[in-house]
Image (cartoon, rainbow, N blue to C red; front, side, top):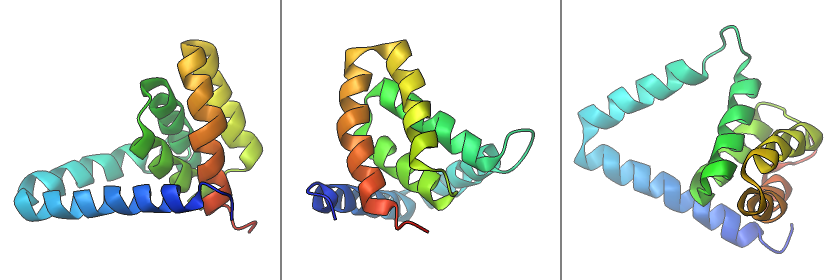
Amino acid sequence: MAQGDSFIEEALQEYKDGMNYLSGQLPKLTRKFNAFTDACFAEGELKAKDKYLIALSISVCMNEEYSIINHTKNCIDEDCSEEEIMEAVAVAVSFRGDAALSQAVTVVRDAVDTFDTGS
């Protein structure tokens, strides 16, 4: 495991815990949000893995660490290679510049190391 694994896994768990809390507080809203999100990421003209790569790139542009971690995990779960992930975030870097670059070379890299089991 890389040095940042503990942070990455803790942050992912914080996100999941937060979503569970929100589900308890606003169950109807959370169900509808999850249904919408599931529909957005479902296979269509674009493959699910491509949609997660897009979401990861947007997360990098937006400088949203929890989303970066979550979408990196989703990319790994959809069998995206490290090369595909880094190429996708390179597009974000070209669009956003230095802020995106710092996220790409730190948070995305740590998340790939954490979640990529080499399968």
